[in-house]
Structure formats: structure tokens, C-alpha cells
Image (cartoon, rainbow, N blue to C red; front, side, top):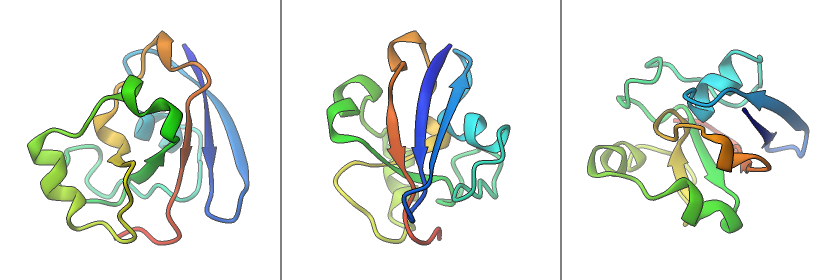
Length: 106
């Protein structure tokens, strides 16, 4: 289990214990965190679970694969640390991870 901090665009914090094996998106959806829509349910076929990974965590969470990169092209307000939260699987090393939600989801 990892404690992950989700930060809404307005600065509201949500500290959630997310089990290993879940995705960042599942942690948000299962805990009613606003700002992650996840319209495709985690199938990597939309960009409504777009988040910004805190720069200090990019090496730990990894980089986007080609299919995710293609979907990120549909995201609004794309940034250097943009990821689809449905594609980041949580493990114990993620304890303390911080992700931020964009102002708008595509």
C-alpha cells in the first residue's frame, strides 16, 4: 500500500492509501477524488484521467508507452510530466507520490 497525494487544480489535497496493484486512477475513482473522470474505465482509450506526476517522482513512475503517448495527444494542458493515471500501477515504492490534476480534462 502507498499513500498518494492527489492535488486538485484549486489546491485541494486528498491523501489516499492505494493498494499495490491498483492504478493511480483506481485510487482516485474508488475514493471519490474529483478531477479524474476516467470515462473509458482505465482502457487507455481516452485522456480523462490525465495527471501531472510530481517531477521528483517521474523516474519512479516511469515513462509513457506508445499507446499512452498517443492518448496524451488528446489531453488538454499537456505538460512535461503528464501521464494517464490509468497507466501507472501502484507499488509500495510509490509511498508519498504526489500527482496534480489539470484544470480541465479532455
